[in-house]
Image (tube, rainbow, N blue to C red; front, side):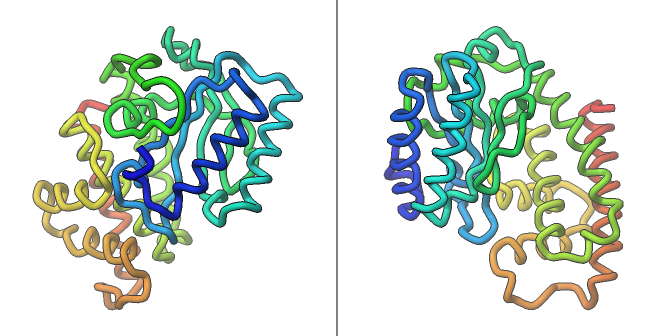
Amino acid sequence: MYNSIPIQLQQLFQFYVQLITYELGDVVYGIYIYGSVALGHFNEEKSDIDFMTFLNRDLTEDELKKLKGVHDKLNTISPYAEKLEGEYINVQDVRIGNYSREYPYFAYGKYQGVVGIKTFSLFQIKERGLKIYGEDFSTIVNEIEWFDIRNDLGERLNEYWIKKGKNPLILMFDGWISLIVLTLCRIYYILEKETVASKFDSAEFVIENVDEKYTLLIQEAMRIQQNTSSVSLFSSKLERKKITRQFVEYMVNTCNERFKLA
C-alpha cells in the first residue's frame, strides 16, 4: 500500500498508525485515505490529505483527549500533519446506513468540532480509496445508494458552492478560483460518470463537454493548481472574477437540470 503513496507522506502515516493504535488500541477499526493522495495527484502546496478513521465504538471524553494529543504530536513530527483532514466515525453507524450522527473532525492539525458523515466521501473511498490500516473498506460499506450520493452533491452545489460563486472578495484570489472551478468540474464528472476522477481529469472532461466560453477559465484554474508563479491567462482579475461567477451559475444550473438535483 505504501508504495502507491508519495514518499514524503509515508512516514506521516506510519507514525499516525503507531500513535493512534497505541493510544486507542482495538477501538480503531480501520484507517482509509481518499482524494488527491489516493488518486496520485498530491500537491505539496495545495492538497489536503483526506482521511476517514473508523472506530468500533464512540470515543469517551478521555479518549478524545488522547486523540487530540495524537494530532498534536504528529504536528511536531511531520510538516504534512497539518494537511490531515478527516473524521472519526463509529463503524456500526455506517454499516446500518445511519448518517444522521456527528463525529469528531480534525483539520489544520487540530480538533475542529463535530461534523456529519458525507456519503460522497464514503463513495470516494469505496471507488478509489487506499487502506492505511485495518480491514478492507468492503467490510464497512459494500454498496452506497447513488440516490444518496446525488443528493449529497446537490446540497453541496446549491447550498455551498453557489454562495462561494457570489462572494466578490474570494473571487479575487488565485487559490479560490482554482478550488471553486476544479471542484465544480469534478462534481460534474462524478454525476455524469458515476465514478471518481482527479480534478485534472475532470477538468479535461468538462472542457470537452460544456460551453467552450469557459475553457480559458478552466485552464486558468489548472494553471494555478500546478504552478502559482506562472502568468495568468487573463488580462485582469476583474475579468476573471466576472467569468468565474458566470461559470458557477452555469455549472450549478446545468447540474440541477441534467441530473435533476433541484
